[in-house]
Amino acid sequence: MIELKTENEIKRIKESCRITAYVLNRLKEMVKPGMPSIELDSEARRLVAERKAKPAFLGYRGYPAAVCVSINSEVVHGIPSKERVFKEGDIVSIDFGVEYGGFYGDSAVTVAAGRISPEAVKLMDVTRECLERGIEKAVHGNRLYDISAAIQQNAEENGFSVVRDFVGHGIGRQMHEEPMIPNYGNPGTGAELKNGMVFAIEPMVNAKGFEVVVLEDDWTVVTQDRSLSAHYEHVVAVTKNGPIILTKE
Ligand code: MF3
Ligand code: CO
Image (cartoon, rainbow, N blue to C red; front, side, top):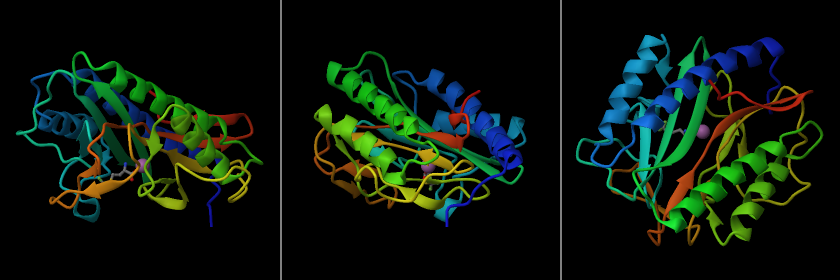
C-alpha cells in the first residue's frame, strides 16, 4: 500500500528534507581535488548535530557512515575514507539523508572535482535532466511507471543506461516505504498516483552498460564495465498544485 500523507505530515517531511538539502549543499561546495572523502562525512555529522537531526544512513543495515560518497565508476553506497582523495577530473556522487522529528529526508547530487571531461559533464547533465523529467510525471492521475519511463527514455536517448538493481522509493516515517520506483518501465502502467504521495526519485545513470557489481566491502556498488556513473535524488510530494520538491533549502 502506498501511504497518503496529510498536509501536516508533508510539512514535517519538508522540515527533514530542508535540513537534508542544507547539509548536502554545504558538502557539495567542499569537493575539491586533494580532499579526502572522509571530510564530507565529518562535516555532515557536525552540521546535522547542529540542526538537532540524525544522519539517516549511519547504522542503517550496518552502514558505517553518515554519507555515501561514490567516485567515478562507483554508482552508490561508496564509504567515505581518509585514503580516498579526490583527484582533478573525478565526478563525486554524494548521497545524504536525515531523520528529524520522526520523518526522513533523502537527497543526492553528483559534482565535479576540478575540471572534468566533456563526457562526464554530459552524463551529469543528462542524469539531472532524468530527475527533472521523472519529477514532472509525479502528478495525480498519472501512473507510477510514467516516472520510471521518463527517466529511462531521457537516459537512453542520450546513449546512456539506467541501473536496474537499485530504485527510488516512498519516504515518510520510514526512509524506505512503498512503492519501489525503478528508473525503467512502461508508461501508463503501475499504481495510480494520488495527491499526498511522497517519493524519493533517484536516477542512477551509467555512461555504458547498466550492469553493476558490489565490491568486497559489501557496500560499494560499481559499474561492471567500470564506466562512469551519476546519481541525483530529490524527495517530491504529489499535490493538487503539482509535484513539489521538498529537498530544497
Ligand atoms: N539514499 C539511499 C537510498 O535512497 C540510502 C543509502 S543506503 C545506506 O536508499 F545504507 F547508506 F543508508
Ligand atoms: Co533514496
